Image (tube, rainbow, N blue to C red; front, side, top):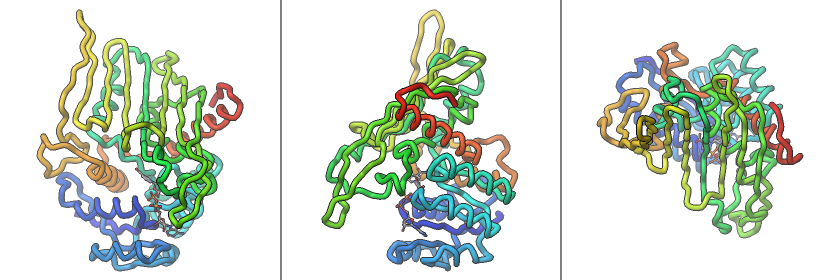
Length: 373
Ligand SMILES: NC(=O)c1ccc[n+]([C@@H]2O[C@H](COP(=O)([O-])OP(=O)(O)OC[C@H]3O[C@@H](n4cnc5c(N)ncnc54)[C@H](O)[C@@H]3O)[C@@H](O)[C@H]2O)c1
């Protein structure tokens, strides 16, 4: 098995999630590349100390430029606030490293386009994080839509819902501030998750009407004071896509204020001859529509049908940590030219396309009009 040395910049929520996925790499049985966490950079020394539990991670630094100067690092994963994406991604490329970027791939459309130009000029292998399509139910929905067997597509809904912002006592963090998260707010935060599969199917909206909502304007700052929160928290995007020559309505939903939802990703694709519904709220359940003399919605319990095979029993249920690992397997195998038709990570072009959708949504909200892309 070939080893690839990984450096992580930003050891917060996602940095540690990714490191944990590497630590359990022995679960994968049909990959020929192995990530080895070699270095981590974070401004916070206390965050760095968590990485003491990973023996291969010998460089721990508060200066990400020291990590980029490490000749042993092949690939850099960057998980920092959105206002830092462009600078850090471009610095990774300039250091001659491959990049696994986080969404939203720059704080806004202009930034995403500049990053994309730097990627093209560098010739490095770059993908953007988006793990939800690696759930077995999401894969089944994607394959079914791609097969064309559902007939004429009538309607698509794709979304991602959270609810923790309903709690006014939840402390503010950088994701609730336009200056750090970006004016897109929930679009920047959750939009890639809703857009990835539609974009991979070629379903990029041509027109967008957006309804955006804000939540609490102030929250505790976690240090005894209050912090202003100015981001959009909920986004409903009513769009038109073209499928098989027909105009089809597609609704993209990104919500931080969805009563009861905890990290719920879902997709629904309805056609004249078939259809599919999948939601991580009911991780195993795949709903398939069948039209015959009678019409049926059939439910099946999915097992562990992930794109990359594992030691996990076929009837066991997958979770967030599993799809993070599957996404990394896709990144490393595609980088090695070994993806072999399996689902690949979001491309820089797809990431720029998400920002085109978000920019149109912001314009639509500001003008109260339908915006063409
Ligand atoms: N794919 C997903 O499901 C998913 C989920 C959550 C967040 N994200 C994305 O991951 C990224 C990070 O989000 P998070 O939730 O991990 O944030 P976080 O706040 O938990 O962690 C960010 C870390 O970056 C560090 N940092 C800030 N500036 C730095 C610098 N100059 N050098 C080194 N370290 C620095 C901070 O100290 C912090 O530890 C964002 O782009 C976010 O949108 C993705």
